Image 1: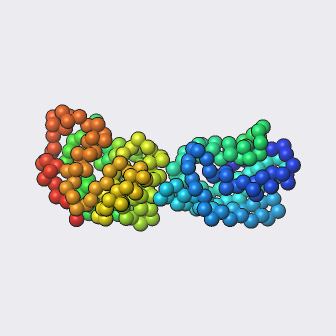
Image 2: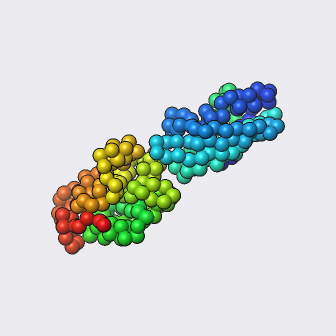
Image 3: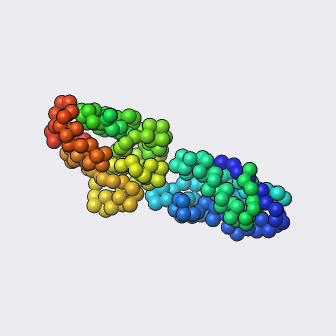
Length: 110
Length: 144
């Protein structure tokens, strides 16, 4: 799944926000996931990440990257089994909402 | 309109026996079969069954994992767990995963049918009127 959200903040500020809170992107009241084994590594303004999402007995790896540009945050993530549990439009909306929350109000999803 | 049932078990003989069990009664129709939990998710999305009967131990994705996912995907659809490893502890765990009822493969499967009718709100009159095609549920032998 790939989403992009526009922003109008300094790139460094967005990089720090993503670095600080990327596991929050996959947590929320809509689906009570527990996150384990979060891993991240930055190459320039691209953060590769992986984690394990747990929902009760269900456990699935999530991996992908976040790219921060001057105008956008792009997330490309393989959500594992979650992609089959959650309709794509809903998953996209949930993730976009989370990213907008991370960036502050006013961001637009692309 | 018969209620549709998705059967999930990695053993073909068990799936065949369950299919035979449900097909003996006109109030049920087996809409599909899956060999593991992962395939069950796909079939459940495709077929929108009224009832799902899951095995516990399966390759790829087991019954508890599948039940967790299915309960999130379609919370109104009852999921039954049918296992050869029944215990009270397993039952409690299964209920936490969203399983509505758990049955031992060694028990009389008439209980499973009875519970299925209750979960799917099949009226007793409807059952009596249409009746079993061949025999009563109580005569059904356990799965081996």
